[in-house]
Length: 111
Image (cartoon, rainbow, N blue to C red; front, side):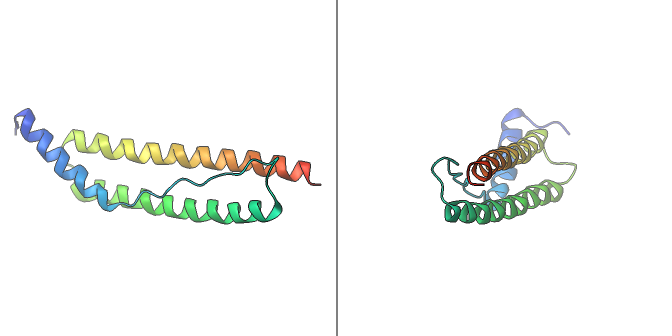
């Protein structure tokens, strides 16, 4: 079935709106190892764990929204959902890398 482009845009917007039900967690502030205290690092470790758990829930939600839309979902919707998934994974990787770098630097400075 061929839909006019304005109809596809409306459908994609409707499907994309359903993904708004997926709550995107706020970023975690990673302290600089040079200025952080042990308490700061322990609190950040807990924040990073909670962030990762929340991001996993977000990814699950995005994947469920995509699956619920089915194979007949507009390509634009599928592309939006895949983009959201990939951006979230990239952000998680960046947070993990930043945390690991600062944690390692902190441990090296405080041994």
